[in-house]
Length: 154
Image 1 (cartoon, helix red, strand yellow):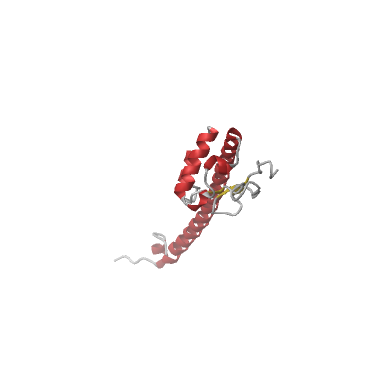
Image 2 (cartoon, rainbow, N blue to C red; image 1 turned 45 degrees about the vertical axis):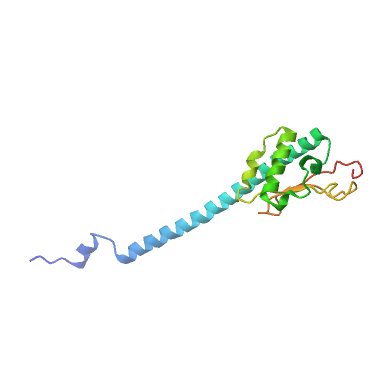
């Protein structure tokens, strides 16, 4: 009968402590990469939303120039932000008036919320000079204001 010393057994595998240390290190590395990925994903969404709002703003400006009126005159709606249906109708009106296809904005912002728009200028009277605006509800920095176009407001 052969007897093996303790040192001979230790050469054939890992101890439970060594395996646990490796598992803990892998878990720490995985959690770091998940946090980094979420930060990158959030920055990507912000960038996409800013780009979409800029395209939206360009279409609004072209529509106002083409129609020679305020945003309210283009959409015929005083507050498109009330519902997604009204917002989608306003997107169609702006797209038609500007000749720029912004219908992809009906899907909403990168977080799944629909964009909001408030046609303020001239809403309550011809001398109402509140600025028109479009925005995403996800972040307060994602908002675009438009210069007034009414002669009484400029």
